[in-house]
Image (cartoon, rainbow, N blue to C red; front, side, top):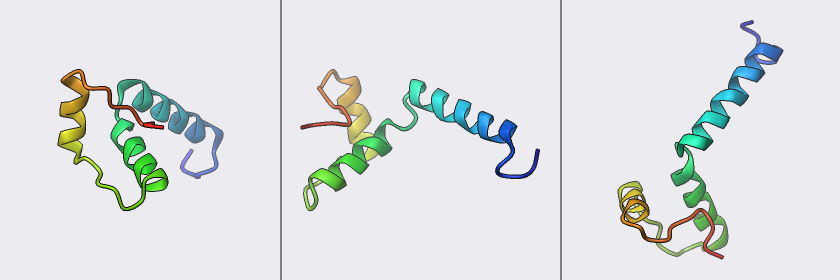
Length: 65
């Protein structure tokens, strides 16, 4: 089970990715990636600003376009 290509290890990684997505663990990273790809040179909110805006009811998503 220690080999990176082992099916059980791949399955565990998939489950971990899914749970992180559902729980919102990767939302900020997706937001940053989108901003850097589609709006280079424009400011990117800090992680604290992002979550504050998200929880204050502002419309903040990974996609702005």
